[in-house]
Structures are given as C-alpha cells and as structure tokens.
Image 1 (cartoon, rainbow, N blue to C red):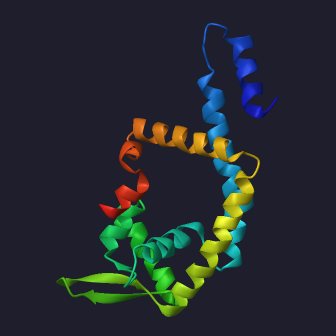
Image 2: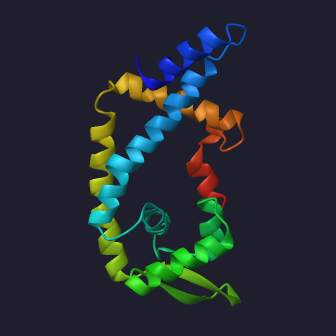
Length: 177
C-alpha cells in the first residue's frame, strides 16, 4: 500500500460518506512529479551546471531551429512564466555565456534571446542525457503503457485547459507562442 492508498483508507475509516478516490490519483501524480524532479531531473541538470528552468530555456531555443533565437515574450509564453521570472532566468544564462541578447531585426525596439555556441553545445549534450534519464524513469512501463499514460495525461491537461491534446498538445502551443 503506497501513501495515497493509505490516506484513502484513513479517509474511508474517518469519513465513509466521502468518495475520496480522486485523492489517490492526485496524490500519485504529485508524488511522482516530486520524486522524478528531486531524484532524477534536478541531479542531472546540476551535472551540467544548470537548474531545470534554465534547461527549459536552452531547450526551447534549441528546438526552435536556426538561428536558435526567440523574443523574451515568446520564451515566457512557451514556458508559462512571468516576464520578470524569465528576465532573471535569461540574465543567469547570459552570465554563464549560454545565451546572448541581440537586437531584433523585425522590431527595432525589441531583442532576441539567442543560444551562443557554448549554449548550443551544452544543450545538445544535456538533452541526450535528459532523454536517456527519462527513458530510464519510464522503463518500468511497457511501450503501450507509456503511450496510454501519455494519452491520459494529455487528456487531463486538455480538460483543465493547459494544452490542447487533440491538436498536438505542447508542440502546437509552443509553435503558436
């Protein structure tokens, strides 16, 4: 019996009038996210000298394609964070030499955030390790179970308004950012 099932058993004993089965699903989602981040993702990113949010910025720039540059607005929209939070993140990445701010040729007043050669080399190496790490985490599930979990999580996210799983999910959301 895991913690979520234990909590459910306690609720059933104390409040049999409540159907608290949703707590098992939500508890497991929260615990899985916490354990994966704490035990697998954070240590991996730390090996590359970055935090998870910094990886997200570098990865978003890299997968955007050449010239690997986006406006700060496109970045904070894609990563669903505040402009102030994105500015601080970009500042840290710039200080590390992994990104640079450039004038935006399409908007004389604006800037682009672009990967430096060092940033591109770093993310190209880190993303391979990240994918290997993800595969190791998911190895307890068969390919069919992984596909089913992905589909169910996409459906859940679409249902709560975080992405549109029916039209491509995050990839579409990022392209429209």
